[in-house]
Amino acid sequence: MFYKIEARGVGESIIHVFGLGDYDLSDTLECGQCFRHELIKKEGGYVEYLTVAKDRLMRVGQSVRGELLFYDMNEEDFLSVAVPYFDLDTDYTVIRDEIISLTDSDFLKRAAMAAGGIAILRQDAWESLVSFIISQNNNIPRIKKIVKRICTEYGENLSYKSGAEKCPLNRIDTPPCEEKCRECGACYSFPSASDINADPEKMLPAKVGFRYKYLCDAAKRIDTGTTNLQEIAAAASYEVTCEELKKILGVGDKVAACVALFGFRNMEAFPIDVWMKRAIDEHFGGSLDPKSLGKYAGVAQQYIFHYMRSLTDTVSK
Image 1 (cartoon, helix red, strand yellow):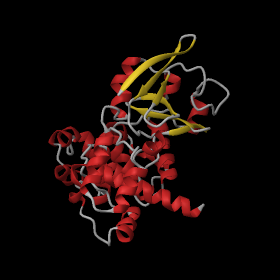
Image 2 (image 1 turned 180 degrees about the vertical axis):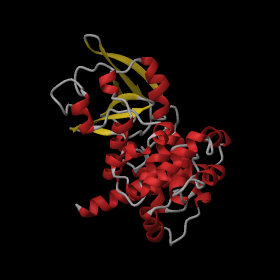
Image 3 (image 1 turned 135 degrees about the vertical axis):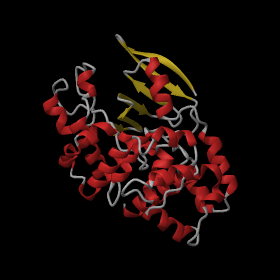
Image 4 (image 1 turned 90 degrees about the vertical axis):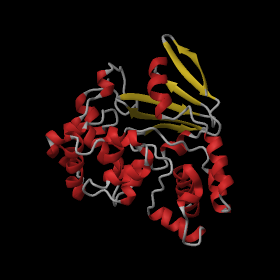
């Protein structure tokens, strides 16, 4: 990874990152691993998103694979927040090549080449846990809607807090304000476990449904230390992660595997959902041992998941 700070205008600059191999911003954000991003612009091969990480709003764009543009961000925040969150210091070309070398599956090889621009974001474990509890029997647009509503009920308006003169999404024609921003919810911070545990009923407007009792149990266990996310992370073990997470009400194999991969970076985690079951049945003869894919099986899972969805989208069009 290399970067340079380029002048944009009076008092403004862009951090231009390059040398990222095949890094694809849209594939990374739209592959189902995160739910806080909002598309700002998509035209002429250029895409731009707003996302939130560590209570920091980030506007990031891309027009060329392997290069990213970060707007309105100082160098310190870029290095401490953006680089780790977007995992810009990992060479995914090496990971993709290793996965390809371990498989005899032509389908997986095609998937790896088609979706090789995907990176595994370094998300907050607590946020990932909440998001994937919400993901049960749900679709991505509705997951995003629920997460945003929870954030507006508990969180802080980061755009308003920063003194922004205009909406970063250009959705309102006035400076950010609580009344209009709450209708959107994209710029709010994520609540802590103690926030939710102290007043769980504030989740109700988000219409979390049967997941309410699961989220309450998760918040209580994390807040009281019954489940210690820091200790789970320190163990750096996929088995330990799943074992501890499944002690939380409503967390089964699939949710635990998702949180292990996206929240704890257990890269061998291999979540199985309906898309993966279909892929395994149709392209792997009904059986696929994740261990055969090595220590980056989770990246392979993302290749397969994203490729299967893209094939379906192509057929439907």
